[in-house]
Amino acid sequence: MTQEPTGPDEASAGRWFAIQISYARFTGWRRVTFAVRSLFAFVISLGLGVDEFQHPGTIRIVRRRDGLVLTEIDHHLPSELEAHAGSLRERLVSEDVAEFCRDLGISPEHVTGAGEDFVESELLSRTR
Image (cartoon, rainbow, N blue to C red; front, side):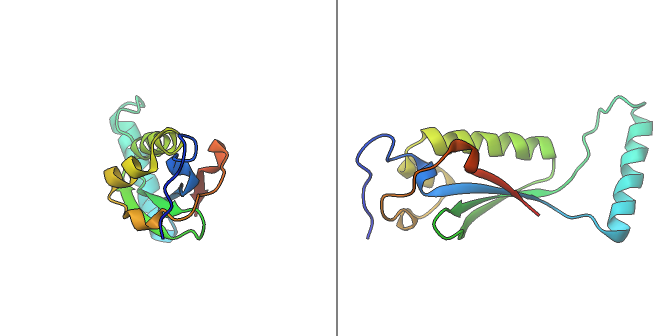
């Protein structure tokens, strides 16, 4: 049973959804390979940092009431991931839940009840 929000604050997508960010873990041989590749790129670019290192990460849109992952968005560059996550957080605060769901391909059936009150800083979390 889906209940329609009654006002602009009650319609904010952040009442139903949150964002989780996680980066791929580098262990063992992969960590050594990454370090050597990063050093090589640094030396080749003469220390100018022209090439950003690739560190895969994932943004997950989750349902706040139970943590169910509704969609995942993969990124290879940390700067792109962080910028996209920041944009999504702003949208959670300011955008109507129906528009947010439509844009991200989330089924409206995940919007049940009146949602939960939120603090903007709690809408984005980092996991390992």
